[in-house]
Length: 487
Image 1 (cartoon, one colour):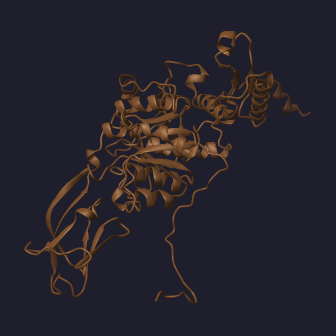
Image 2 (image 1 turned 120 degrees about the horizontal axis):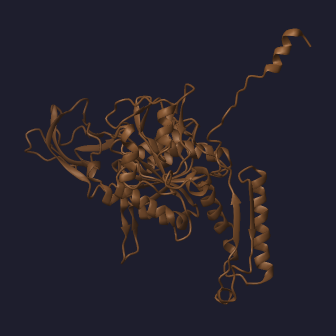
Image 3 (image 1 turned 135 degrees about the horizontal axis):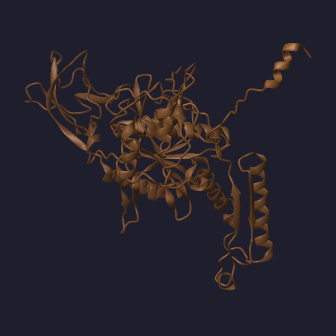
């Protein structure tokens, strides 16, 4: 007979970071590695490998991909921690490419002690389905779920629980274990870049950004791959992916530059390796907070999303001079990078965003896209201006999608013009544009195109650029000497 509940039932839930979900948001898409052995989706569903995960909360992200503070090996955990806990932002799309069926290493037979009828495998990433437990001398093989049970503890360690009265003798003090564990080091540029299968049409790696809008009708805003985007091949493919998502949308690739390179050589490294695209935001070097090391791209995206959220999800304001969740800057070897404003400005002048501590708190520092100084026009060179051009284009497509295949008549073209201008006027009133209008020109719509159903609308927009340099002009005014003699 099933036990019926009666009276009180008391449960306790471990505290988890709570994200503040703005009414509108900028959607980051992050690709990397996760401790997939801890995923709650392993059964009955397949492990989430090369599957986009839309997470609105920390709990959702951890349930799907697991969590570890080993940010060096499990790069998506760094993103999860930064996005939800440090920056209180939501949502995010996470793509894990670490496949336990491919990226693993076998651990030779190891004798471990039985302590209070438990055996703990301390190595992270141990895979339960590969575990074999034997007697210490290896002569007897024990049976899972009969002689012992398995589970992961709060630290992500695999714990073997000896069952009383079963095959493992009560007096045994140790057992021998053989297992495989995840090997994040075997994940490289090939897995991150991925591709599209010509036969099945299935996307993997960076190509999965194409799946985001069809799945959730959310337009990606930023693409990041911390731990891998300092590879020029990965960075080039990131830029290629964000330039035309679903053949329509645009986003920005936030890339890390090689943090082993000293600051006086980083501009040359950037140019030599081709980090020079208008849809690219270069970040450098790395940062530390509360003893943990983060890639700069991770923290920059958190700052940018926070600024966007404060502006109703509109990316009109620069993330520069906004709080960077860092206590210091470091090179990849952990050595401290101490820079003053003069050096930070030099780095900025190369089209690179860095960090700066000028008033007691670190801030992101830099307004320029990767295209600067090759291009210095606002549309390609200023991060918020480039972001607004992308955002207005993306939103125009989404807002007026219902007009596609409608009748080509003055009423429908007029509704697009009127509706577009009404929308742009609202952006101007909110301060997100200095001005904007949409026009329907006869000169841009020849009869030959109209007969083929091709209609063009012309947008004129001027996003506000950042006040990058504020100059105060100070002059000695001799007339104030009259104050010596009274009014």
